[in-house]
Length: 100
Image 1 (cartoon, helix red, strand yellow):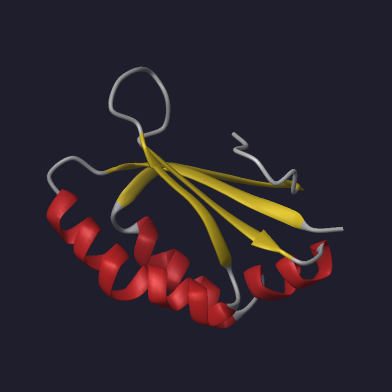
Image 2 (cartoon, one colour; image 1 turned 180 degrees about the vertical axis):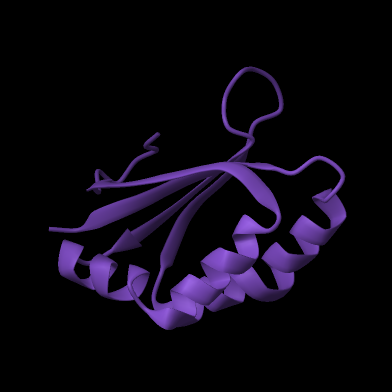
């Protein structure tokens, strides 16, 4: 069964430029190389919700755990953690529509 990784976070205030450069230059190409099938990228403009939501599909839970346990993912994740706060994630069954 396909699964979806849903990640949320807030950008550290004052680091927005560095964050967006990292996402475009390193994060998106890196996760695509790893096998993430990116499905969602949302930015909250108003309200008390995480500032960023990113979704990615995997063919099954085994593949998701394999990729999320890789050293390449750990390196990308570590770099992301230097630029964000309130990071959270969950793996859920993929429904084929927006999920939060």
